[in-house]
Image (tube, rainbow, N blue to C red; front, side):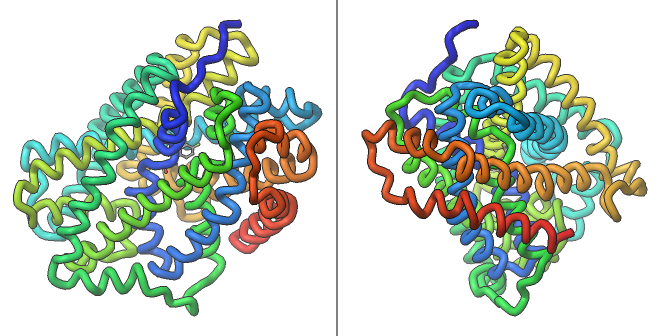
Length: 442
Ligand code: PFF
């Protein structure tokens, strides 16, 4: 076997993990989830879950990956064996499922670069909503963009961990951050934006219910890229000097900051333009063009925004594909490049019904009233990731705790002040709370 690649630098690892976390989940999904689930109360629940359970599971994944230096299935096999590798297997499955619909939405983002550039996104709220609905319902175009995005993802992965992913994250992530700040400056000064700020920032706790808790939990897992082994895989390319606890804190903080910024951008604009905050998955795509139309150099900012969002989606997509490739090359000795191409093709095909499900197949329901895309999202985000998170926590808290303590302190060299709290969360809080939220959600 060829030597495993390693991250080029400490910053490289944190940025790559942050690149995995920050993506469509923050900018496309978070605002509409917050919009559908009561705004401020959702935000608070989300942040509490991120900084208790989420960050702990992330650290657990980093530690498992670095200790084992293997793909998610192999990592459990190396550390314990028995049935535990099945947790990794579930993660590989989740990677296929999530990437299949993720790529479809990322395809919409690419299409919006072109639509911004050609000036086809104009008109009032209604016209922008109709333009979005018409585009995603088309049976051909969105699938071509989905193919393009999958092709790009495979190409970046072929560039290797160090060359492709790390370099892209270093420059473009900070750019996205700055651009969000600029756009927020415009959005919150729009007439009527205060109502959106109030909706997002003043929580009404009487609105908390099972659905909201479930939404906040699945959003936290999805956004942090945890529960499926993506962070195990990234941890496996890490050297033994890195401070894992600090890295988990950085990645979780960067990720939730971008989600909050996206909320501060989209929700004030939603209220200012009279859109419906509960409009669902189209929210970002119909609201932002209206913001760009109200800005000097709006077309320029619009193009730049959708380019950067595409890049953010790409760095996340790469982290969804990487565990699959690591699995087939670590465990089955498959050629990594061939695996990337084949997996990319399978995921492309699996994404086609998702794309059609928001158009000509919109009458076909799978889970409850949900179409194919929403059902895929539900199976992955509301079931596979949280169940994966429960099992990862139990594994670290109960099964290999001593080894993990050693890993997190770099064999005693780096003190980790939150050891007791972390193990307590892995042992008790995460399994019980996540299971409870899952059961009340069903
Ligand atoms: N965290 C990514 C986002 O918020 O867009 C999506 C994602 C990537 C989920 C990797 C899961 C994963 F393993």
